Amino acid sequence: MKVIICGAGQVGWQIARHLANEKNDVTVVDNDADLVRRATDTLDVQGIAGFASYPDVLERAGASDADMIIAATHSDEVNMVTCQVAHSVFDIPRKVARLRAKSYLTAIYSDLYRRDHLPIDVVISPEREVADAALQRLAASSAFDTEIFLDGDVQLLGLSLAEDCPIINTPLRQLTDLFSTLRAVVVGVRREGTLFAPDPGDQLFAGDACYVMVHADDLRRTMEVFGKTVRKQERIVLIGGGNVGLMVAQELESRANRVRAKMIERNRECAIRAAESLERTIVLNGDGLDAALLDEANVSRADAVLCVTDDDKVNLLAAVRAKAAGARVTIALINDPTLVPMLEPLGVDAHINPRGTTVSSILRHIRHGRVRAVYSIGDAEAEIIEAEVLSTSPIAGQTIREIDFPEGVLVGAIRKGEKVIKPAGKTRIDEGDIIVLFSLSGDVAEVERLLQVSIDFF
Image (cartoon, rainbow, N blue to C red; front, side, top):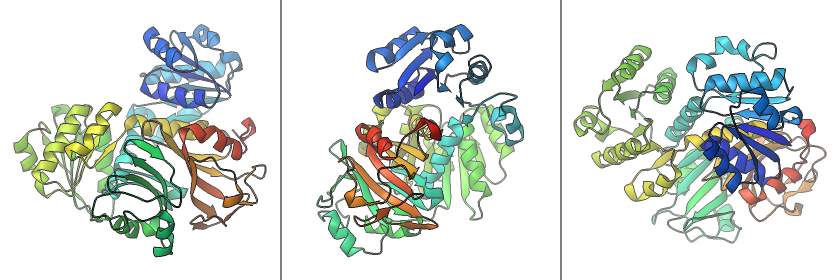
């Protein structure tokens, strides 16, 4: 597949890395020559320095025979014009644009993106994606990572194992015997910085970080088995009242179970806008690092504190201060991956990776085959892939133990018709089944082959 990626920032670079590793023909376009050089020096991609919306620049990037264009520059307007040029001049079949401005995303204006208006096939909203990720973290606040699959029937949980975890030093195959009715599968383990797909004979140890695929109905029981308490989220403090904080607060207000939410926003205009947009949320104007203001927001009694300002360091320090003040759970939005290893030593419970959520959302729309969802784990170390099994797939009609999956791949859940089942070695994979797979990044290309990848299924 030939793909043009416009924008060589963090998101564009990560998508280029994913696609280049899978032997796609990738060209990166950016008006910053240094960013283009970084991409071409570190990845197997071609690079063009220039404005992505210019027809001559796209022509040099090979737009005349490209299969897809992904417009992920920092400018909404450049992304929109790029897709228009890609359609009108070069007839590129698939166009994806990242748009940030709330006005462009309002549902009543959705007709704007029809082919006879602004021909954009897929619109990605980073703020919306991050807000959804934040709400998922709040729903499973004892988990450091979480994502939903199979239309919400299955959830991925990232769980850190403490010394008092009841299942440490127990082989995974014994967990199946001990909890035979529990629909949960450990698909990935991070130990001493290394992520791997465990074997049935592997044990879990204190300090491990596990990725577990869980049926939604067994979520509470799974958390208890892994030594995590499940508490009702009744008092929530949001630090940051920008687009993400506002979306989260509005969603919390719309829910039937009443949540007492408070918001701290440093910028006075943003605080006023948030106060006018919200009905029950108390908005405080001030610095989220101010101990007196945190005390006024009753952080010491908060079930969760969500730090979502546009400054990583403020989010990190605010989470640390809130935890020290007595907050049960702290969650920080962190853009810089080099800060993530500091979270555990500082006592921050979980984090949200905006780049990861945006990359995952875009990858969901550019995979070959009948791929329905993709979630990127860690620093693009692994992916969770949800896909429909095609009649032409090599795995159709075989049991799981008969399929020659790579070592870094595990099946986490299967939907057969309306029923979601826990996979076992004797489980047969049939045409039409929806499967959820954990795959280390190096094995993704083989997974796509097993799913019978074809450009016909775009």
